[in-house]
Image (tube, rainbow, N blue to C red):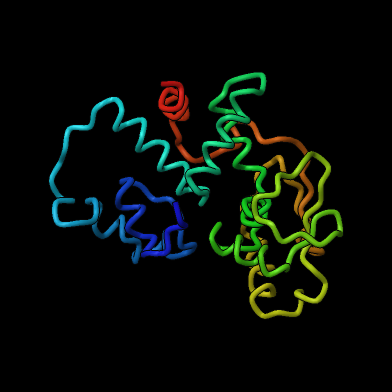
Length: 208
């Protein structure tokens, strides 16, 4: 399946919740979900009874769209999570959280994960002071993400650096707001993920 390139606000409306795909717009009065909460399309306003499979599918789609990964990638993450010790659902969310693009977003250097992916692909960030431009790289405890020296003078990053003062950083990341670096202190736990996923539904979907 190709990556979705249409209006991302339609995805939020389809899932019936804010997925924070457009940065500041999602917390403003312009948010499409706040204006019109019904699903997109001609029959979106009609309520439909959702069965067990429908709930499981919607939860999977919600998580996949929230983190911006493709269907095949998401299934691969599930298979990795299923092989690890512990709760499969929590392992799955952990796999998604430690992606390179998500950490760039979490450290406050992008307004959305989509923007973070683009910035990573353009080579603006480094891992352990080495070139890295693959958004799906999974980081480990002790890894350090830093903004490339030649990118520090760009207006965009100067503005984002100013906004870092008010940014809430997850406790498993240590962010140096002066040098614009982020160190992975620990692997994220379920309590560190603030979005209300029902990950057990995803496990049930893939376990059929």
